[in-house]
Image 1: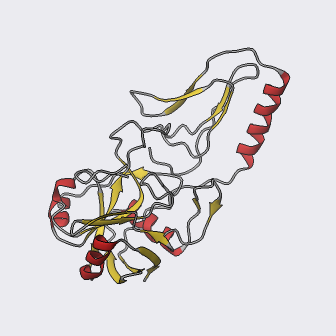
Image 2: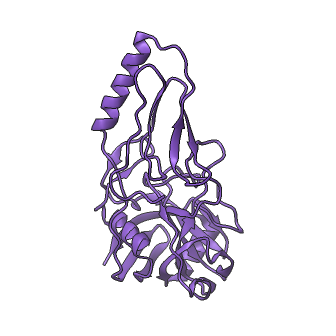
Length: 262
């Protein structure tokens, strides 16, 4: 969950290495780039982050396998190999306009290109041009930010959207590294700063990233006051106008109906 004082929300580009144990011992399919896109556990394998490399790895806890166990693992391998994958778009440093059509009115934002990975992710997801994984596990390519709640609002402080789970734990199926620039503090100090929330795994969910890992998901936050204390822990992607609309949302909640990129 996200806190008011520290907004929260490795790299997953390209194909990941698949780790498969030999028959007769527990089997786990994991991504070796520090993120888990799809994980299958057979038997008593346990996924753990490496304390030194922050990579995912499987620790096997041997047990006796039956024929049924072996067949289940074989089916898991087939399912994983055939499943669709999602990954972050290539970086894009060109500036764009992001128009947020909400239930309280329209908010116009500028995505300035100074955080190329994050900017590419936000604009691609908004257009529907990038695959993402919905809460059911299905891979979809519809616009990510359409018809989604501002699940976290603090009156006159911030509004936050981009979580299809609705509790702050949702991502598009991947996370990207934090991007920091030298003047983030000054940019965040101005009302209207647009940034991606820092991601921390909920305590009830296994996640390969340890607490405080420098990664972000796709949750957009509009700051309505001085947010400079978050410099270094969030990725600033631009700024927004029409703050009267965002302020109304912060006081009464609302939904993001559609996000358009121009």
